[in-house]
Amino acid sequence: MNRKVAFYTLGCKLNFSETSSIGRLFQDAGYEPVAFNEKADVYVINTCSVTDHADKKCRKVVKEALKHSPGAYITIVGCYAQLKPKEISEIEGVDMVLGAAEKFNIIEHINELTKQPKAIIHNKPISETNIFVPAFSIGDRTRTFLKVQDGCDYSCTFCTIPLARGASRSGKISDIVKQAEEIAASGIKEIVLTGVNIGDFGLQNGERKETFLDLITALDHVEGINRFRISSIEPNLLTDEVIHFVANSKRFVPHFHMPLQSGSNKILGLMRRRYRRELYVERVKTIKALMPDCCIGVDVIVGFPGESREDFLDTYQFLNELPISYLHVFTYSERENTIAAQMEGSVPGASRSERSKMLHILSEKKRRLFYEQQLGKQVEILFESDQKNGLMHGFSSNYVKVETPYDPLLINEVIEAKLLSISEENHVQIQQLTETFIH
Image (cartoon, rainbow, N blue to C red):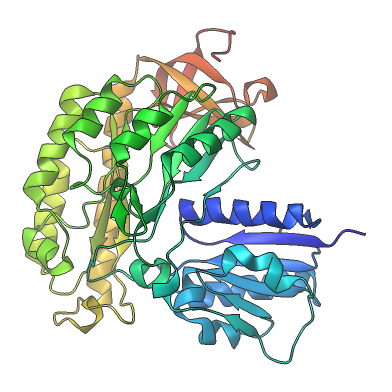
């Protein structure tokens, strides 16, 4: 009888791609994957250190797993496992903690499944984590996240990622193209390129061998993929050449997610970001000049140490005037072993919450305005497999979320449609223009 394994992923798209790849390792070893709410022999929880309450979330997921299968073997991997292995090992029910270098050798570590009195920790220093391990998600949605880069050489004062994932490193373009071809052969229509700092693509063993522009140029020739989407890319690494390439590409879609973090140059300096707001404005102008309908998403942190109300309002006004499409708002929280945690000028929690709320409201306004500007246009929609209240959802190439009555024939299909109106949930209703699917 096959042993059963279940997975739970906290955090980013990169984590999802890695969980999926770890899942394939288990399948190759003869395990049967099951849903997390089913009884399994092994539960693997992939953790995050970026979002708040990592410890609390990890404990809750462990507790849930043991509810479904009290005698199961619980393994914790991911960024939080690298940063706080001892803390995690003391959570009741945890059997093994694997750091960044060990998580892809999980089968070697886990084969015995013998529960010990204390959790086993395999956790090398992050300086020894210098090999790029490829990963991509497949089989769980209509688009896949393809990992092209890992780690980061930047030293932003608020961030623990370099401590959790190590130095910047990348796969070879030839290998990534083969993975994209494998994904295309599975029938998936959209690939999202993901990593920690993907614009820094091309470092192998500390030497720059290739560039991000080289990568996207090669991927543009992969047959069978309708869309490539670039996930978060730093404004100082989103070059004019990359923007021009996307504008002229048939496969790379007009959608950029470009972190800002603050619209105040004073705060950008305290964060040790590698640009100032003026560069950000130039990037947005270039994108919109070449692709007027391009969707631009923005990461912003509120409540950073030293951020006065005037600094925040500076950020608010800066964002309000930019032709961006939506915001991902993060409330600053102190992280151990970061410079920012030692800085003076801590912002009270109530002020952090108020600022976050203001930017969430601004984000909704920005998204609605962007959607309104798209109404009446003819677009191509790729439909997802989800359904709720008889409706299914899909996305245009420029990331407009649409809804239409559920039809199983539309799942993972690209159709032409006209954008008609916006629902109360901020989804766009469509008129399907053709029964013919676009392949």
